[in-house]
Figure 1 (cartoon, rainbow, N blue to C red):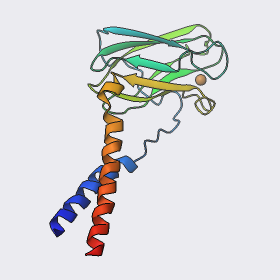
Figure 2 (cartoon, rainbow, N blue to C red):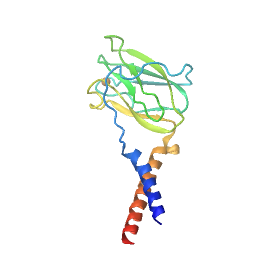
Figure 3 (cartoon, helix red, strand yellow):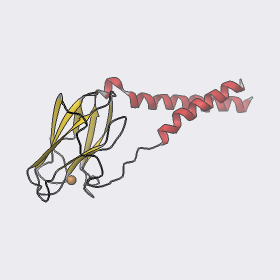
Length: 176
Ligand SMILES: [Cu+2]
C-alpha cells in the first residue's frame, strides 16, 4: 500500500511540476527574435496588419496549420513602429516580423516563412515595441486545431484529477 502512495506522489509531482512553470515571455524589444525564414516553400499565406490607429492589430486571432511552412506577411499601416512577434513554444521557433524599413513605418510590409510544429495549441502574438503589448497590442496565435486536439486543456484536467486523487490518498493514509 505504501508503494501505491509513492507511485501517486511521483505521478502528481510529474504532472504538477510542469504546470507550475508559468510561461513568461519578457518584453525583449525589436531584434530579440530571429527574422530569418524557417522554410522555403510556404503552402499557406497569412496576412496580418496593424489597425489603422492605436495599439492594436487588425485581427485578434491568427490561425495557421500545423506541420506546415507558412508565409506570414505583416503590414504596418501606421506611421509608428510596430512588429509582429511570437515567442518560441511547443516546438515553434520564435520569430519577429518588423513593421519598419529603417525609419520608414507607414505602409511597410515584411514577410517571413515559419515552420509550424506538428501540434495543436494556442499561444500569443504581440508587438514587442516597449509598452505596446501592455497597451493591448496582442492576440491569439493558433496552430492547428486546438479544440479537437486539446492538448493543453486535457493536460490541465489530468493534473487537477491527479491532484484531487493525491489529496484523497494522503487523507486515506493519514487516517490509517
Ligand atoms: Cu506596436
